[in-house]
Length: 286
Image (cartoon, rainbow, N blue to C red):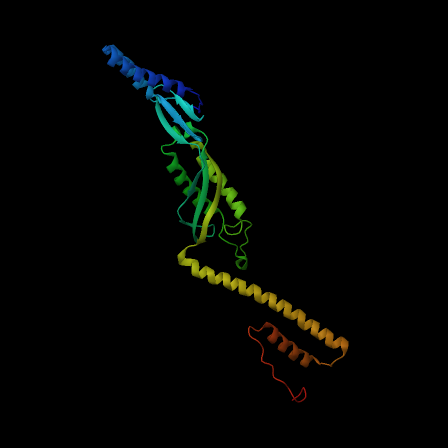
């Protein structure tokens, strides 16, 4: 297996000057002297001109000679190489890829819509140019495959009411899921000489066919949790009220009246609406 080989070709400015000198010097000599032999000078200057290579910052040129890998130019500037070399441009800049929203099943089998945002760049130009057919398309396909695999490894959310408690979920464990996604994509793109700079979930939601049902379930879970908190607080308040009445001897209540008082207080404290009190102008028994 051939590895990437960085080379620094001949200075392009010198060869550009020589090419122009041969080209225009030969033309001038033909006009003034009239000898056709100076046509070789024009031809040589024209051929040398095709050997010039301009490499921009964070860019590269992969050089081939009749199908044989010669090397890669990574240094930016103007250079001159053999005019017979085939020059393939590969960018070394960081690229951003936002995948399409995919419908996949999570660990519990629930259909979810998910997409990923990937930041990547080429680090090995030989692998990117020759080990895969089209490295940009390779990134897209392998990223989609990695997202599908990741979604099947974790549930969308925890369902404590069903006894399903997961340490890592797609919705809440953002950092852990991003690290797992980055590692999975990096393992797949290693053979193409590509480095993953960042990978994270860009969109995550239940699929449309179960979104309404899951929303109702989440609302019901929230309501139950709120009710539990309200009842817990109401019991504490009723207990405190009975203790205060008993300690300050404001009124003596038998067990039946205590039960009635507890019932009324619980209704008032746990009700969704404001209570409408009824004032008793008589005794406690009437």
